[in-house]
Image (cartoon, rainbow, N blue to C red; front, side, top):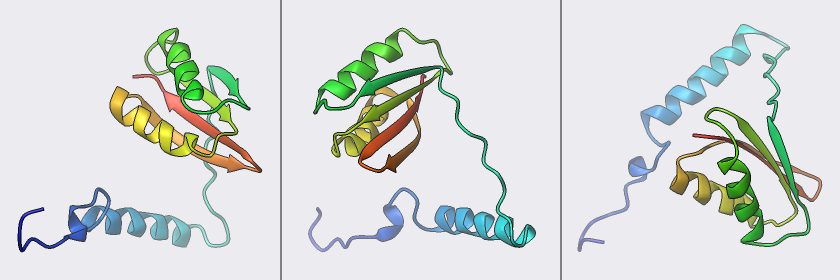
Length: 117
């Protein structure tokens, strides 16, 4: 860090006007349908892998292998029990260029949806 420099929260990825715009859009959607939230489309996976009981780096390696057999735009669902997999798949997608669609925690399982680049 440069001497005398201060942390600027607006330098974060979703801070500032982008965050306000996304928040405003969500509020407008909620206001436009009083008492109801719009239905989200369920994500359908083209392939699913089960990595329950495996710890880092095995869920990532299994996902990498599965993605290599898929074509562009297909969706991979990964079910894991490793709590570190949430952070691991975020970093994996950032490094590889695949899109992390959603991450969910259901009971003690972590579900990840990745879209092949």
